[in-house]
Image (cartoon, rainbow, N blue to C red; front, top):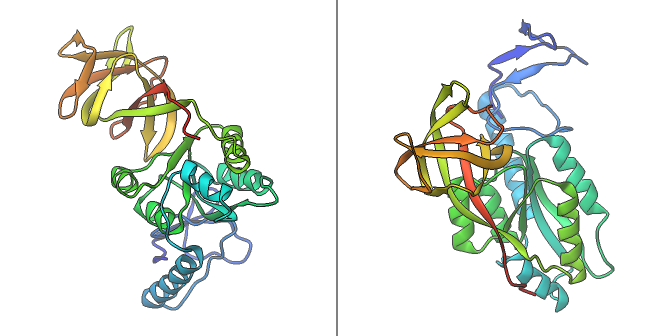
Length: 287
């Protein structure tokens, strides 16, 4: 909900009134609606807040089921034991098209004994509300080209909520199939190393753009893989081309220190972006 602060037509021209069948851009809502949602005008902001709060509360109550925590592997054990007949998931994606494609793909996956149920889906980074819902509903969180914010990550770690990140829809489908058929046994896992926030961007002749960063969590390590996040959405995945402190190449930079980072073959960086550093490791099978 929210007051309409500004409206523009499909040519970007500011308008005051929009009639039936008029495409408009509306500014003022306190959240991101989904494609297909109804847009309803009420008499004042208090009434809008009252209606929105009531509907949000009813939706939340309808989504939540018996509380039980656990990773995807633990959920699988409960499926095998016949304790649950549904695998609940929360889906967050970078664009609405990706979210709808994942929902459509998961709808086709299932066995006679268990199916996937989408509790909630939306566009944007994974936040605390998503983790709270997943915890209360014993659900898995699927992040497609998005990441969890620091607060959501902390809650997920504390409460044992399983967040899985993907960039290919086929991989989402394969993981869910394996979970339902008892074949889930990932041998490749990501290890999060740290985050660095870009404070300034420098143009270096014959080199390209260098990100002046401060490591805000963990550490950044030369040779590790990285993702560039803008508003918790992944816009690049690759590797560190250079890692420097005071013009000297270094192996790693720890939390609280500043450094210069150059990304391999990528220059679309902006102040405020976050560089996520991670390693890919082989791990023993858990099922």
